[in-house]
Length: 211
Image (tube, rainbow, N blue to C red):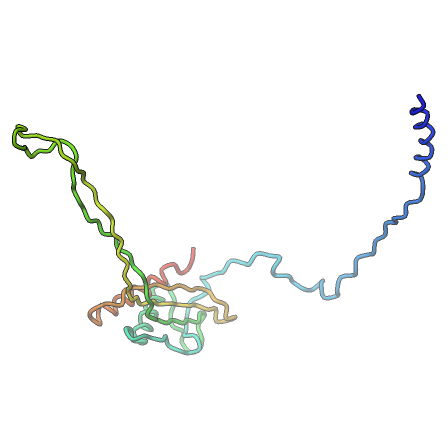
């Protein structure tokens, strides 16, 4: 009973403390006004980039007027001829008198690659009935063994010929297409090397225009 009386006596004091003034006062400042140029500034990052219309590109010319660079295994003139033929198959014609819709750069270089070959060496120990008879066994006896193959991985280095082709928009210089392809550089005859060069160029441009 005395405990309850004490709680009742302290209750008005607690309520009076709750009704006191709050030392923390909420305050806020207004947002600063937007700059004057905000109304006319376009934020390109807030919108997805428009899809590129590859149909607008009909002609091409060499970027900076420079022919492709060659290597020890490829003549620059052969690379230029291969690129020109591949672009023609994609509906792109050399520009006549001035820059084309696309600026083209191409180069070829030799690079090292590591190749792995997996060989299987067989061995044939056997366990079970043997078809070879032994003395006193009447034609069959039990032996040991099994048939299996062990893979052997061989790693060697080869030299490849890498062709890279870059296409740029002639109006703004933005990259439009970039790809590379490679082929072996150990061709025996000049005809084989030229054929491998053309195959690499066609592979590099095989995905143009992208779908």
